[in-house]
Image (cartoon, rainbow, N blue to C red; front, side, top):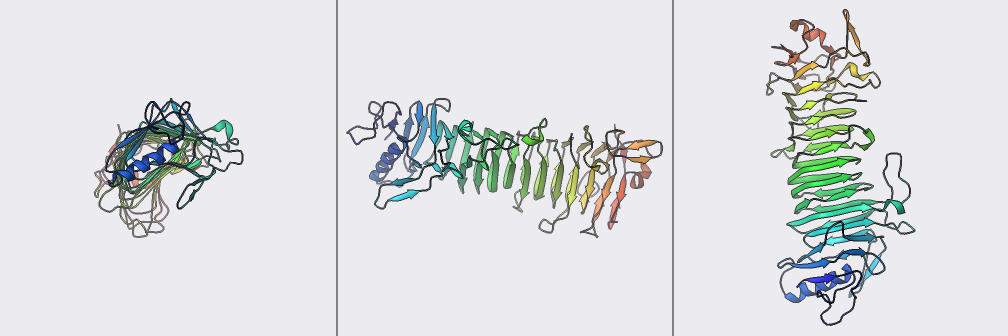
Length: 457
């Protein structure tokens, strides 16, 4: 049974035929209660048939609307489009009639039955800001699709943002799900104080979705693809487990304050976290740990790129600018044993001014690493790391001024084996002197190999 709602002409009563197109309900909450009664009366297991709550164009808000809107598992919630249907959520506590009576925390807006399509959910803070820490849409059933949905904050009604443009009174979690298969399609999460899109142990896909000042968190993923997502202004972009991130734009090269911290963790030993292909990442930091593949991307971080454990960095263009501190740092982490493989990458020294004198070591190796000669084929183009640029902190070498040496300092792993064989270097110095000209060895590893060097084009 389909149920119709119209916020302008509907009536929330028990009249015969209420909920049909000619006699709609006024509130989504009342329609959801009716849908739950229909599901129960059917005698079928929840979710075993599909009905739809149709939300006509207009604004749904208290006092007619009550939260949370509890859509039963057998029902979709479908509006006429995110530009036409607005749900204003003020975060007041709701007590549902019993027996038993249940009081819901004022921070919950919508419990999705199955699919949610074609609407905008706006946090509209109450005068006492009772919606601090609220949750937007909680997706709880397998196979759910969230499509053409916008979750945002009414910034005009909120206290002013901080210096980074972030609002304190906002959705802490805008769209969330746990342990389900889900598709998030053509959606937008904006102005979340914490997580815009948070999925835990989920499979499925997030695609063609915009995140503005709203973090992405996909933890312990069980086969999740993040595709064509534009993330800007968020505090973080975190993925973990069997997840693939591809064709995404993360951060903003023109504004470091609009760039998140990008963290990729591969805690699944048999299924890696894959970052690539075709991501354009301009985050503040990049951290990668464990069973991770970073392949065929443009990486332009603002400050630091750290890897630990068996991370594979392959076929990337690594070309930060501005205040970048290090192009790449290999760190020792006892929680992530294994040797990173770095192959076929192009490293380019930053074009902006130096920050704290750190351009002198564009690559830092503090643990075993394979840049070529082991599992790595090498072919990393390192030639552009050592060009003359008087804007950098530099090291004098003969009559030329050099922008950097590779720092080798495996303090926590003194038995480190560090290979830089089969790579392309600048040809200013004779290739047989690379080990002394291009490296600063602070702590001597067990092996430092620079075999079969070739001049960069």
